[in-house]
View 1 (cartoon, rainbow, N blue to C red):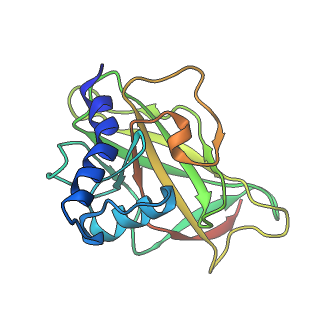
View 2 (spheres, rainbow, N blue to C red):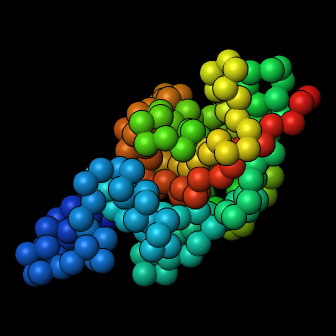
Length: 200
């Protein structure tokens, strides 16, 4: 079994062990659901294990967990400028990211959703690799699919996750209710960002 997959499977066992030793909520193991795991990872800037998924904050190094991390071209305190094809229709933008510390055959995908705990995650197409060797980089056009008449604008938040599949399954899903269902080993999640549309 892949060591990273084994590590992700050991997280729940470790959580129970720490709880038996009197661990508090600050240990990060009182995670009730995936959204709570995402919030904890973003708040602590550390990776959190949830079922078979390791949830990490994007654009942050978590040396206590391991060398794996993902840097993006997103400003965590800013907004996303999204080009809209038609009023109330989909809008898209180019997301770039650079993974570090992964095996060379790791597969990456970008998932996106509106910042609503009940919103599903849409998993995009295969990103284009623009770097090689030990420091690859990727670009992918992300589409935000929103209801007609309710296009993203100031005050509407979106969230992204770079998924890493160490042992990818085929075919990969295009939409999931929870990231853990995707089969990914890691999810590097961004903080919610304000989406601002620009007419095409």
